[in-house]
Length: 181
Ligand SMILES: [Zn+2]
Image (cartoon, rainbow, N blue to C red; front, side, top):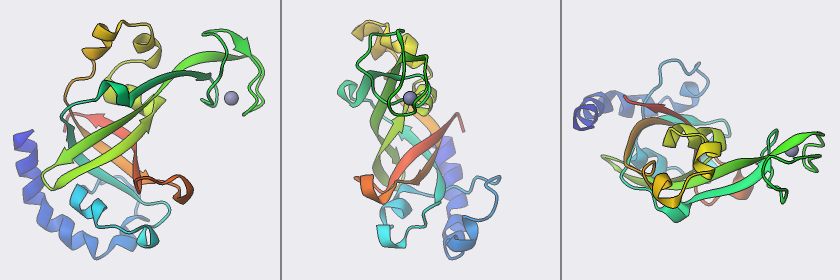
């Protein structure tokens, strides 16, 4: 992590320059993974945020609070919460599919840090699985003690996107994780 943060700091001068060209930046195909900072995210105001904005961050998650990792059952197709027993097939009222499975889902609220600050992000089942490096189905079946072993410190490259304005508690949410730098 320390080495990666030093590299990040070296690159930071360029990131600051790139900020001037932000409007152009979001329309460039996202192959270069321009890295920004939590400080920059925190400086953003909803009214100045582009709808399709995406950013990459190098972050670490020092610890997960177990109560912020929430498990529930939901539609295997659209993820909408269900009150159906696990692995029972049903017709989903939300996506209108027949024969969906009531499957383990999860969401996680976590605090990420980099050298410039901290930010609370939320992430949902498929991305949450990447963050914890475990499937929701497997975690769901584990004891609390076994689950705890997955809730250890993480370092990763995180992609964030603007949250829809209606639901926003925080302006950005996590949309993609790459482990290792
Ligand atoms: Zn559904």
